[in-house]
Image (cartoon, rainbow, N blue to C red):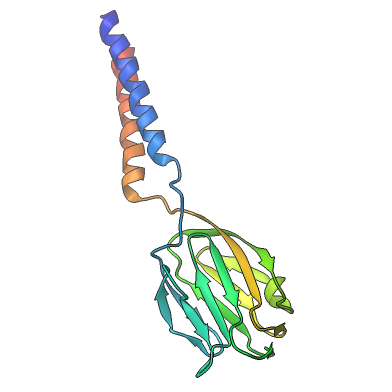
Length: 175
């Protein structure tokens, strides 16, 4: 009887450890997310985050490039002249798979205006204020984006089954 109880306790500990190991957040990454972008002359409308520039602002010339990677957004000013961007309004990037928990400026080599200071984010979107400022040729503005993965249904199921198992073992040994 004592051996069975020891085995039950060991099994309970193993089930609990496995359950909580699966609940630890996996490293959230933006790579592979298909997101939507809206804003003045910003295209294309959707893009999948991966290698290369996802969005370009400008009809026939590149006014600004927007490049996402695993945890950053890099905004660059290509071209041959200074860009004065006034009344461009908000540039909104939305439909991220993971939950956005933070947005901050990592570095800025010359962008002026509210783009670097009026940062807004919601659970699945980022908004950049392009209402006024100047960007010189080859200026680079890098934002750090922190995210948190959304728990998968199987993780919740695993947690629930582990808790049911713990309750079952406890009930069994109370008798």
